[in-house]
Length: 320
Image 1: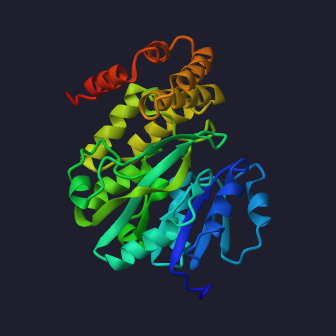
Image 2 (image 1 turned 90 degrees about the vertical axis):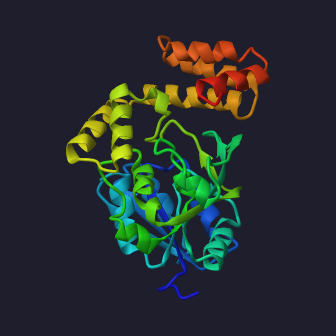
Image 3 (image 1 turned 90 degrees about the horizontal axis):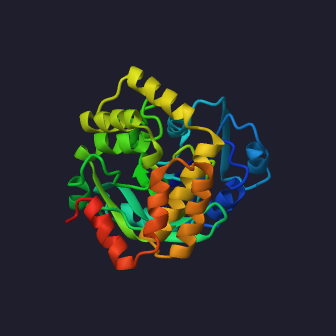
């Protein structure tokens, strides 16, 4: 390996990730594919994130610290400093499976007409316990190109892409608060070929510290702006400021914990039918937010048979 010219840059933004970043870094360093740099952008962390990063002595780790500017700015700074032609996105609370880089690098070099390679992922809870396996809505390029703009085609932490294509598209839009990846895809896919591999290559951790919360817990105004900008493939600074203000008001531990437990409950009901675990999580969500009627509905539905729940969900999604 030429340490100055790695084949892949694993790009990891990090903000107050002390609980999980050690495991995340280790999972990258233990990859079967070794010709990479792990570029970590410490986005103004105030906990022990930087201390934990510096506890690793592997020369493939490159640490850049900046004042807190948000994930989009951190990613753009990372793209500017990445030395490899390929970017493997990764989050500081997730876990790479051992062959992740090998599988995606071999695919994109064997089929250079592709620009973006995603994958299925295994979702885990805050403690690392398996919840369910997520398979993307589209796998083949034709399927991805036909997805509605409301559907994000990739799990961001799983994507492996050509750096040049994203940079030429302007990188990540810093106004698209919490959906900078989705906004990027709707603007770039019209000119690029993409696919999702069917095998899970990472573990994505749901946790109450994440800036991203269940869509259902966002306000109507937030969702309206988000989907309007995705449809128009354009977002203004004013819209970005409004999203940030709305989102900032929801950045309280109580809201984020409630959203986390509610999401875990739904996934244990719809994606990995374990009604007892679903109810346990919904009880926690209800205790935090006793006035949210949807929590009671999910708790009640958990007593019905799996086939009925699946049928009910399909109707709510307009699949029948």
